[in-house]
Length: 117
Picture 1 (cartoon, rainbow, N blue to C red):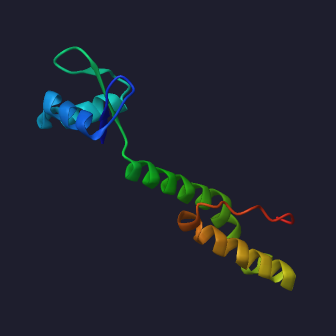
Picture 2 (picture 1 turned 135 degrees about the vertical axis):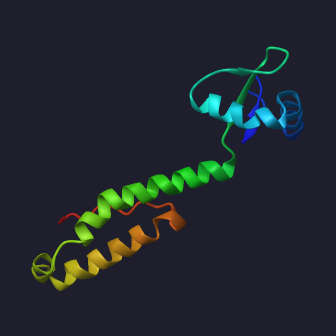
């Protein structure tokens, strides 16, 4: 977590905030902010803990995983009877679409739905 104060952030501000809040209260700030509560330093200034870039990226990846589960796996996990009724072209398109969904967390590109699904 990085601390932001009054809408501005830099490395020195983060160190100052951590020193003012104290390492022991650092986790309390994160929990309070997550609950939507305001946290103030000893001078009464607001201290808001925002996620780091890595935490944001991981949240984005988790959202893509959820989308993949909802949009893809229900189709891919259909039974043999359904697959037996697909044309060769549809099987190729479905394979490519599935591969794109498997790579979604690396590419950050959501595959376009197949028209015939």
